[in-house]
Length: 289
Image 1 (cartoon, rainbow, N blue to C red):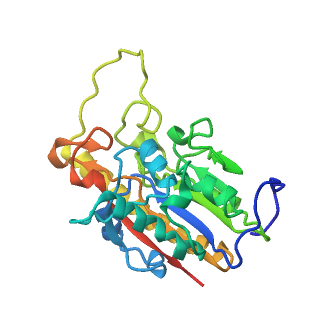
Image 2 (tube, rainbow, N blue to C red; image 1 turned 45 degrees about the vertical axis):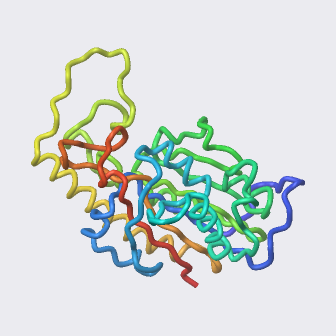
């Protein structure tokens, strides 16, 4: 949908001719093999999914890294980190269809929304699902609008809120929570599934002694992994709607902030876990038309 919703800041430059809209979709907590098992169909319109590696194992720091413009990496051997970072920023020349983007151009802020808004004249928007990404966090900088959804599993509601400026390219961050614990789809009761204390399992009831939680049984872990796979299939169906909604000249990246453990090595979840399944994430991107 196209509409003008915000007055442009007087210091916002005119955008480069032909600049793409850019949509970054984060399937929160989705690990690589979950996406493979879901056998997505619509996602393949962007290209062939590939495994990549997250820079962080928890939602908030990972999203900060993503908004620095550093997407999950390939973990190449025999290169300096500075080389890799330069290559990653050069990739935005293709994503945005803008020439001259490089690591040095991102300085001093090293923040993608700031660069897009104040250097390239983009409209910047975010719709997020997880409370740790709420608008009061430092992530909400140089966004024209930044909204925490009322429910953590409402990508469909996000799509209803999409607005693209008719005169300027738009950048969107969409943080999708369907693939995050408790992996429930809209209309389902999260209480019907194995439960971690706290809001969506990401915030604990600090100060409440309670009782020590019992760790999940193997069959419960397996059931949660199946639900994450099912959630990926559900989201893949919604991506078809996203692809229909975006205007021409829109480049889309779909990836994850980190993976998830479902019993491997005795672990569940993500965060303070050192295991390849929490670092390995799916990555696919491309331009539809």
